Every structure is written in C-alpha cells, then in structure tokens.
Image (cartoon, rainbow, N blue to C red; front, side, top):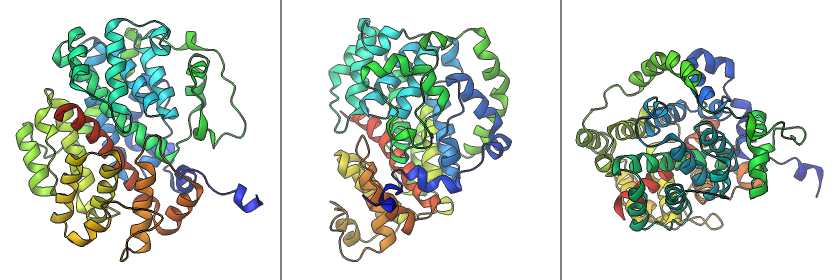
Length: 417
C-alpha cells in the first residue's frame, strides 16, 4: 500500500475536522448545557463541535437529551430509577456497536448508581435483565423486539417508568448513529473512566481513537467514577435556568398538546409522526416535535428537504421499517420529488446508482446507505466521495437526519408492534 493510501481519511470526523466549531465559541453560545452534560458524564463530549457545523444538529441533540432523560427530575428520583435508565442506555449502545456511546453510557450508568456487575452482566436482578433484554432487542439492526419484552419490563416497573426506560433507549438511537457514523474521537477522560471495566467484555476504542497520537492507557478504574450525591445536583440546578432559556427559544411555537404538535409537523412540514401522540409523557413528545421542525425547515436545510427525504428513504429501507418509509415517501411528495425519482432510490445500490442522479445526490445517498446499518459501514472511499461532493454542513445534516430516523425507528418499533 502506498503512502497516499495510508493517509486516506477513514472517518467522516477527519473530513469534518477543519470546520469544527471551537469549544471556546460553544462555551460562549451554550455554556449552561455544556456544564450540565459535564456534570452528568464527567466530560464535555467531542461531538459538540461537529454537530454545531450544522446548527440544527446541535439544537436537536440538546433538545432531545434533557427531555428524553426526564432531567432534572430523573436525577432527583422522580420517574424511572436512574440507574436502570442508564443500564438501558449502555446496553443499547453495546447492541448498536457504538464504542463512543458505550463509554459515555457506562460512565453515566455508574454515576447514576448502576453496579459494575450489572454493567458487565455478571450479576443482574430480574428488573435489570428485563431492561437489558428490551434495550438489546430495540437496538440491533434488524431489531428483534416483541411485545412480550414490554410486558416483562412492566412486570418490574410501572407503565410510565417503563416508557422512560424506552425513551432512554430510543434517544441512544440518535446518539449511537451519529457518533458511530461520524467516528467522533473519544475523550481521554471517558476512556480512563471505563476502559478497565468494559475492555474485558470486548469493548475497545476502535475508530474513535483516530485523533490520538498514541494508544491511551487507562488510568485508575471504575472506583474513580463518582456516584451521584447532592453535590452532583449543584451544577445541574445552577445552570438549569440558562438551559431552560435556550430550550424555550428552540421550542418557540411548538404546541403543548400532542395532537396539535403532530398536526403542526404534518401540515407545515409534510411529515406525519404518529409516535408523538402515542407517548404517555409530554416532555419527549414536545422535544421530538421541535427536533422534527428544526430538521424539516426548508430555511435551515443545507441539503434541501427533497434530497433529505430520499436520504430518509434509504435508511428506512435498509432497516426494514415500512411505516417510516411511507412517511418519508409522503415527505418527498410534498417537497416535489417525482415518483420516478423516489422509485429510483427505493433500493439504492451505491455500486450501480440509478440514471439521472447527479454526483451530489449519489454522494448523499451513498453516505446514508453506509451509515444506516449498526454499526455503520463507512470506508475511506465513501469519506473521499463525501468530502468531494458535499459541504461539511451537508455531511452533518445527512448524519443528523439518519440519526433522527434511527430514533424514530426505535420508537415506531416499540409503539407499533
């Protein structure tokens, strides 16, 4: 292999690195939310500078996390047990084979009170095992969820608490997809927190080590991961008002009623999302509505909603979700995509794309096709194609939309089975 080949970029993150938004700039814009996530997992995630390349991506992420995790109430013992939510998130990440999120969620679960034995599977209660089973089933591609898994989960937790557990798993659909698809570099602090515990279970940093000049040897171990105390709540509560102000701005105009929210997205943006009215909890339903609005607003799209609908169709076809495929076909129709063009990408093959697709469209659909499975099937050739034909904002937008689509996929599997 020649020198040029060895220097080829292997992750989208390497291609995007030149356009990352500096952490200093993020701190200026979003200090409250950065401080709160640091309190939750001990680091400010390296994904933030990439998501902010296309600003609705960063907004989607920060609308989703507190509302799908029922924060700050969940930290204070209201709703589902926080250690169980954390265990579901970790299990989901391992099932989706996202090494980045596996490290973060392991730290999150331990900080919320999960035992090391529950994380590694050496010893679990029946309730923990029910959580692991449903999280694994929802998070593989293809999924292997069946309604009896929900029944077993509700044997140990109330229906409302069981839904909060599932919301954590669904949220990880977005996070697993984006971090794995982009290949975001994992923070040294996260590696040091959890590597000694989960490396024996088969975890490794993998592609997320690309930015490190040398192999990082973990320092310390799981005993150094602090478990929640009243001190944990101080930075969360101190920064909550600022985070709420940002959220109110991002949610401006979103109805509080779930039926009205669903109607808004269907009528104004052309996408009907039935799970909005299926959720028992209003917080994640409203956050999901706001995420969809930001992702489907023509004025905020770098890619264009017509091509974006085809990206969503490629994802839905690869994961086998016909319900989701029907919604994105309708989105394509609303935004003027011809039936012939939709038919041309119904079973998109990157090796033989249909006639009539320009280089930009082929690149966008090829990226979507590669990142749809779990784990993603990214290659240096696809990274090169993306960098040649797509802007950084377009690459992030594609990755975010496929990530939103995976969140919707997990939710629809759960609510529609």
